[in-house]
Length: 353
Image 1: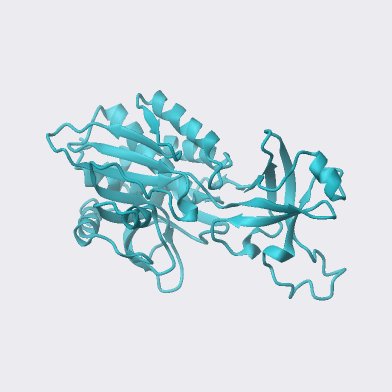
Image 2: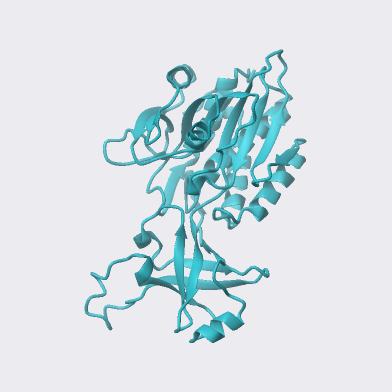
């Protein structure tokens, strides 16, 4: 649904930047390249991105008012992936997951192995019982860490040959995102959690620069690098009193969110989010005719969760575009991404006239 808020946002910019981000490997703990790209893009828009010792990025937009209290929006650049656990006698790799996902969702996936000296090798994730033509129990074989391996696209059939390529325990493995953006606005790819929300925040930033606007309260955009492993945004600057985590909204079971909605989470595994902030987000979505749904995610946590658990004295809320098949082959719609940015604009009280 079109309205003045989402019309003023640059949809083409958001989707173009999202597509670029999706192509940059960034499993948790391996976010150097994508953070360099965010820093470069922020500079193009006239903003400075600082880095924390942990590797998170923060862009501060000074407020036009007198309030000393800052508000923060956070999204995470880190994704699911894996790490080499061991090099097997047959030259293949055993892996250990980075982040929480079902191993079935990566079977048959193309991947990259990133060595510590900067080399990259292609491979494929497979069950150790690869073919029904060979193994009578291939269909029933449990897909878990011990029964999965990576076949490397190099001439290697032994541990020594694989190690001679420079591949070693602790090397990062990233999945092929398989990005597709259709003419109808569907965005399907791995890692929309949470690069879709990162692109939404940069869409908001691009609008503020183009419109020459700034919020009344100081705004901090925080991009975290360890969310998928639970401690991404556990540290918060002391001047922040409100935090909105911008992440995906999951779809399924008794949930109401669709791929075209802004998901507003009332409660997740960490407990209820701030009642007043959540109510304000709902009212703003209604006021600006932004399709939304309020849902509860019992198996979900966010960077707001980690900030609260880390002892931050803040109020917190959680929103994001609805994403189908989260932590698998994900899909959302460009409407949901743009409308998420529009709702965040509305929360800042910025006029689009």
